[in-house]
Length: 175
Image (tube, rainbow, N blue to C red; front, side):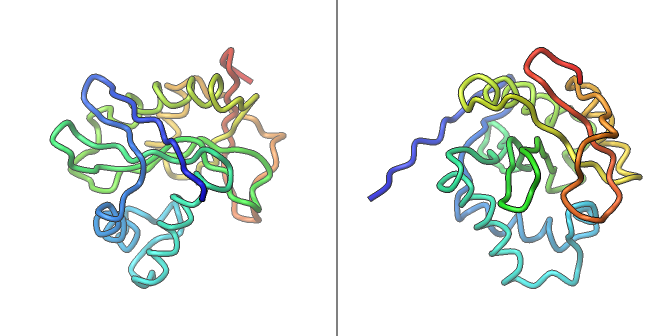
């Protein structure tokens, strides 16, 4: 039997914790919405697809020993997810993030959460570098990447043939 120990972190306004089955419904609503257009979502996604995507996110904890955390308000409401993300076909680890509902935008939740998770990924997980793959037009995520110290890295390898802007993160900051 394998037992996982997934760290829980507190920030000023958030709890960053493991994915739970109770998060599946809000995650599915997000993934089937227009908000998810930059992560392959939309109305075409079936409940089955969404469940598999959620299981993939959670399963990385077992396969890699790390994965995304769910961002929760202090009252326990899940509002998004993010952290180190390294699917099997990705060329290198990524720092990714999503807010599940527009009502939580422009409050600094992603930046607050990732300011806690990025140093943890470098120190405790042992990542030497990571990227953020951001779709052209996703200006909000590009602003977050810059605010977190990401620097555009045009020489980095994208995960597929879709156009992306790649931001590089290093423990000491910059490219």
